[in-house]
Amino acid sequence: MFQSALSILQNKNNNIIIHEKAEENKKKKNEKDEKTKKKETKVERELNNKIEFYIQKGTVKNTLRSTRNWISKLEVFHKSNGYDIAIEMVTDIQVLQKQIVKYIASMKQLNDQEYKANTLKVALDSINRYLIKESKIHGVNLHNRYEFPEIHDVIHGKMKNLQERELGEIHGSQALNTEQVQHILNHESIREDKGFNFIRYSAKNNQRGINRSNAQIIPISANYRRTFGSYYDFQLYLSKHPIGFDENLYLQVNPKWQESGIWFKKNHYGSNKLSKFMKKICQRTHVSISENFLSNYSGHKTATQILHDNDIPEQTIIEITGHYSIQGVQTYKKTNEHQKMMSIFSLLSLYDPHLSSSQEILSTNEINSSNTSQEIQSINFSHKFQSTDSSQEDNSNNIGKENQNKMPIFSNCNFSNVTFNFK
Image 1 (cartoon, rainbow, N blue to C red):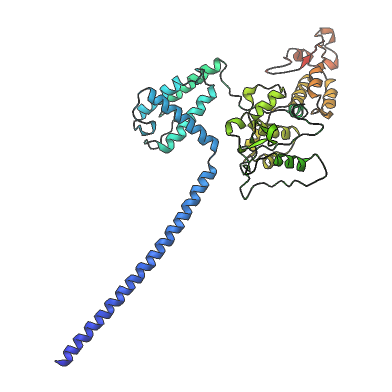
Image 2 (cartoon, rainbow, N blue to C red):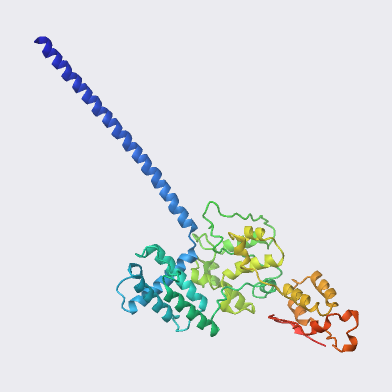
């Protein structure tokens, strides 16, 4: 009896110990799981932050700005036409198509002028980008001509109509040529004796910023004795700043600079003022480019074009300008005056072999000199048309001449600032 009671007590104690150990193991497991969960949460959070960072890094600011601009205009159209549901909340494809078609058909600028034809495509691209991300319609794509045939027909019809009215192309920013750059640098409005200032533009392909750790550092050698040069210019610039000024360049001009000797305010210019810098420079120096085609981005195009004109390899141009691909650089490439002249000589040499020697002479000249345009304008082309008289057809030099004389000298060619004298 006593042995039986003792045995029961021992079994009970063993059960208690086993239960306590099980609870302890369970607690340890929970603590371990909690630590693992926290660790996974931290890793996941860091990974999500990286993903978000790369998304932001890969986002083109101008594209985002364009999308917001056109969606804002579309929302104004929606409200003015009494649509209660936002465009991204529309769930019926046909309803969405009708609303987009009406907007495209009616869209105009604030001054009631028509947009350029290419602007319509930009608008549709922006709206489509927004709907792909925000629309309740899964997989929506306004460029699908089978799913949205009316959008396709209306936008192409309106673009064709605008092109027929000579409202087809958008010229965008126009680059300055080498002569115009030299003209600006040598103009009395900019030059102070024999020197000039070098301004490095910061465009969308070079947004390092002065506070970034990876900002490009351009060392300026100190020379305290000289009263000109890069070091002197920077010292002069900094000496005209107020105390506590913004570190960025392009500070606002102080209208009372003559009284205080301080040329600038503490705050820098806004984007609207900066966007007019190139226009003002060209206006004051009388550069022959319409101000409608000038922006600060013209400086970036100008540098790219000059590098092209000097036969700099495209890969080298990419490293200088900050483009991401050769295709991006090639979009800036234009035919310069030298190349136009060489093309003209190549065409004319088919009819007059003597012109080939002139072509070789032209190719060895310094076309990019300051007098290039005047030289090109004064070049006269002399071309003797041979008679097709039958008495001359036996001459070996006139073989095939009859067929050549029937060919047009120029076909689908555009010339500017060139004088032709045919004799």
